[in-house]
Image (cartoon, protein in one colour):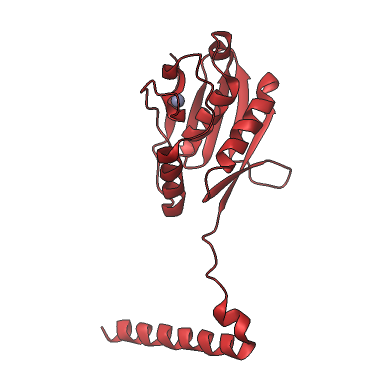
Length: 184
Ligand SMILES: [Zn+2]
């Protein structure tokens, strides 16, 4: 208990010191708006995504236009590589290593059947961002995936999906590692 109180006292003194020093530094430091929560930046590499490169960039841009706690950026040398994207001839799917880290396969079987490639890319990125499949058939929902049919070209997350992803990244939540299979 004594050391606990001592820690509280030390913390209080430290806070006082910061307050005093910011006042000494002038009005700016004391009245500045609180810093926004750090945005987690994830780097993705779409260079192996063959004919889906642009769809992946667009899917990432769609997420960036909506969420605030995480941002998807193109990987460049020297950056950590969080998300690898490949193209193959199977159904689209993703392997999630952890929240924000994994591998996406832009399977050609779905586009061959008429599914929209940008919606597929945004959906698979949704898995990497922590969202599970929800085969509701609702087109406005990104994670309904192929259940919404080939006529559905909506490639933006809806309000619930945006909130979920923002909350996951705000809390640094754990997600279950494993495959997210999108075979119809
Ligand atoms: Zn899926």
